[in-house]
Amino acid sequence: MYLDDKLHASYVNKLPEVFYSEMEPNPVSEPKLIKWNEELAGQLGIKQEGMLNVVAGNRFPAVSKPIAQAYAGHQFGNFTMLGDGRATLVGEWQNIAGEKLDMQLKGAGRTPYSRGGDGRAALGPMLREYIISEAMHGLGIPTTRSLAVVSTGDPVYRETVLPGAILTRIAKSHLRVGTFEYARRFCSETDLTALADYSIERHYPELAGEQDRYLRFFQAVVDRQASLIAQWVSVGFIHGVMNTDNMTISGETIDYGPCAFLDKYDPKTVFSSIDVQGRYAYANQPPIAAWNLARFAETLLPLLDAVPEEAVKKAEAILKEYPRIYRKYWLEIMYRKIGIQEAAAGDEVLVEDLLKWMEQTGADYTNTFRALTIGDLATLEPNEDFLSWKKRWDERTSAVRPEAVRQTMQKANPHVIPRNYLVEEALDAAGNGDYTLFDSLLEAVSKPYSYASIDPKYTANPPEPDEPFQTFCGT
Image (cartoon, rainbow, N blue to C red):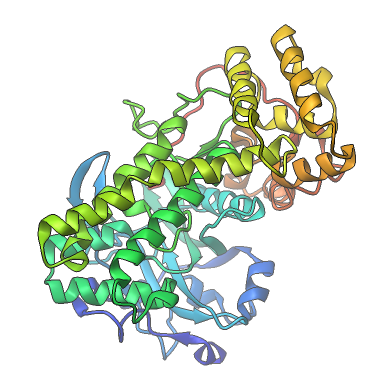
């Protein structure tokens, strides 16, 4: 089988067995390939031919030793034992660039961590992850990606009977903060050390062999997460469930359940139906990341210093830097969104005042920056406060060629995002077998910075909903 050339057993030869359970196929009755990501497949060096039974979980390659991973996590602040309850890691794939990537099947059936669940997934949530993860990739934000969606031919039973599906997810790895929480809570220090060493080897190889590698490892994860969250916030993305099991060691966005994008700019926006307290609201994402990283620090304390008090001091010193690091990354992006390449005094206030105006007027987040980019200010319904801001902005950018300002802004401001109502329309139609809307939306959001001619519905302000938009955990 041609897969044998590039597929290797996942983690099995690198990590202690306590971190996973080996899996057998959980066959489905009538697999049918619904979506195949040709661009990603090309980067991986995978051909579609012969892949159906692999991505359906009906058969695994001979060299593969599929596993379900054990992990724990803080969900809405409460610690719990978790694990891959409906996912099977097929193997580590080596792409054409020589990089190792995980190939995971989501919705592949029961595992030892299913906790009574059926281990399956419905078609709608798998298609949702496919389109949102590809939109995030188009936006240039680190993310897991979707290679394929397969309908299983088997129903899944939730509040109603739904068609079953399996998504093939490609990731730098599926190691999470929750994996380290599991190691610290339930495993030996030897196991924890093995996990840290493997994570460094996989994601931060420049640190391998360094005497203070565990401290620098923590610092590197803090830096990547600060950068990631800054990118989320800059495009108006709300993850929805920032539990510690949804924070990766690699710094990729993972698990697209109740996620969505801002329409009107309101920092308190929450889309998730289960986030009744607003823990994971748009503006709370940066501090929640810091909270999650503090939990990560707790798991690493035995490796940071033999003296517990010294270990805490070292971890705290790095955590204290997180707000500054996040702010630096965020401002760098926001400056480019208003056409500024080199920051100067007063630029931070210029950014904050624009956001304040947007919040006060309920302006659309994406389309405000799009209008500034293309010079279509009439669509913003400018009032006196905005005109005052624009005068300051014009003065600030007057020393730079207008075309250079526009190019800077165009690279930072998407002209299209996966609008919530358009995603829902596409998923509803796909549920009835019509993928026309899905395919058109996918094509549009895959190239968000092109500013090419596009159907106006993708760039228009969304209609006022009859009731607040809500998203739900895919089950």
